Length: 161
Image (cartoon, rainbow, N blue to C red; front, side):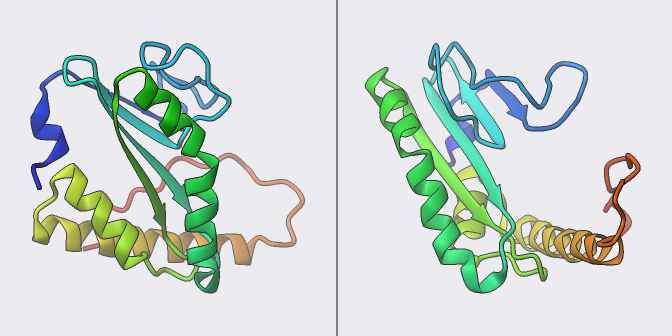
């Protein structure tokens, strides 16, 4: 399988985060589809290759991973159909990372394969993702009785080797 990102050099990226050139409320890229009711957590697209990859992350209780995988797949199925009808190659990636720190082997490895991660990179990323999920669940648990949460900067996991 050829790595999707090797198909072009004009990739655009939008993720569901607040940064200077995008906001959490940005819509699905209009150059792909004029209107869409849904917007995945992350969208990567190339106009020259007419290819779009999206990532939809879910952090369920581990026993519910399969259920949520298919729920997300169903939720974005019409978006996939609409993009393909406009001539786009679509790679929908529904990824589950459990709230107790387990990344779903199937969906996580599929994402890494589509994006072209090497084995070592994939294992490092998986470890960082699992530690981050575990840390975030712990913070939520510790603050579960707080009515108001103060705004916090993004979590820096670069030192968690």
